[in-house]
Image 1: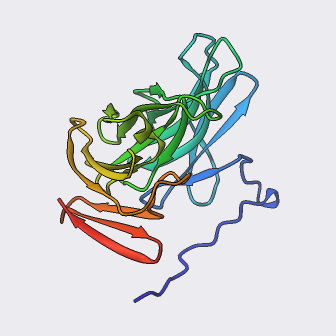
Image 2: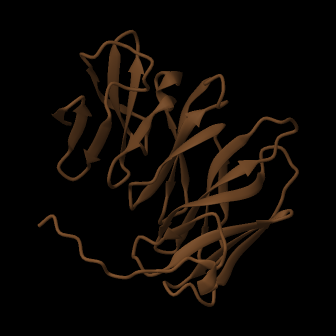
Length: 242
């Protein structure tokens, strides 16, 4: 009906004694918040109700100084069921920044973490969270890989693409089973991959000329159930079946 109904108004001001944090992430179910605090060498994840009272400490992480291991937890990216998906930094012996994707349950168990250079996140799926990006944020040396975290199993799957530049932009499907990439090789090509196997199921050559943009499309959505892809290019919406 295109109508919105206000369900609840929440006061994050200091006057309300709300825990101070850079960000809060509302759970998909809409009944809890998760947030992170960083003090000295410790990152701590908390969850609390919508009244922001009586926060519960879920997980406390001490900074690791081992190369490639989780050094600092930065942001809660997804909060679905009992799975908290976070972004974090990995320790490196130089000034290079390595980011990655990780998860821990709301019971503080099964911590997982996978580094992925400089990372971007796709958090629209309620089933899985995807991280993709470059080995370095400045020179954009793409790795050709992405990592997909399954919210139910906490398993982190590696998705390998045909072309390294494809990890510059990746879109995850609604249920997290498929991913779309774009690459100019030399014309724009859109490829559809199966996440579980890294198989390229189908590819389409786009009519748009190569440019400095990451892709010719401004918006993409993949519906797993009816096996359709919706691609917005300029002011025109295109659909494709697979």
